[in-house]
Image (cartoon, rainbow, N blue to C red; front, side):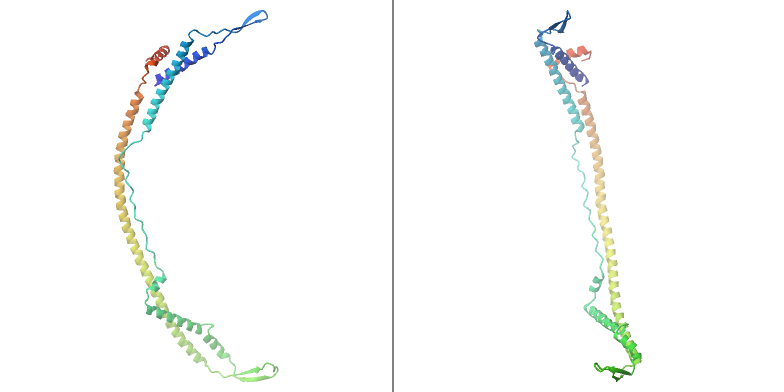
Length: 297
């Protein structure tokens, strides 16, 4: 390759030198009288008798150069192609297994707990809740019984009434009390006890619902944990097989790549050692230039 490049360069230089010489050919010489002294302004360079042979030689140089450059490029292209040649293998990369995804069972809320009660239980709950609410509203602060108990000790037995349109003349009004403080207290106590019993029943059902929800969520949590553990076990089995297949694949691929690269290096070495076979029509030119340059053929 180095010698071919040298000869190509020599062809180019030789052809250029001859073209420079031919470029000096002209049709006339020019002489001028300068202050009594004859000076040559342009020397005569006549068309050489061997012009056809010279042009033929230049053409041979150019053709030889083109031939060598094409051979050099072809060899370079072959080296590049060999260096970039992809490995061809029948090995197939193992497919990663499709792992199962865990879908957790969602926890339940209070509504689920209420849905677990029987129709009779719900009827009792609604009954107790409604009656407790009514009684509580009646006896608690601000309720009617509370107002009656606060008012009773303050009632006066005689009031005065002024009729509309008769200002200035008051009429006595006799007030008759029909409740006693102890009586109202007894009513309050009786209703408070009933309210307490009803509230206890309401709270019983609320607590029962809470317990049902707690137990169900505990069951769901354990069930989810068991299923997740089982899923992980199955997925790990699939991955273990996949990793083993990948390990085998890498080992086999490593061996194949090693053999391929060794063969590639052999091919590159063989291509690099190839010599350009000179076409017989250019052999004389190559010999001539190598002789002039002192290069060994």
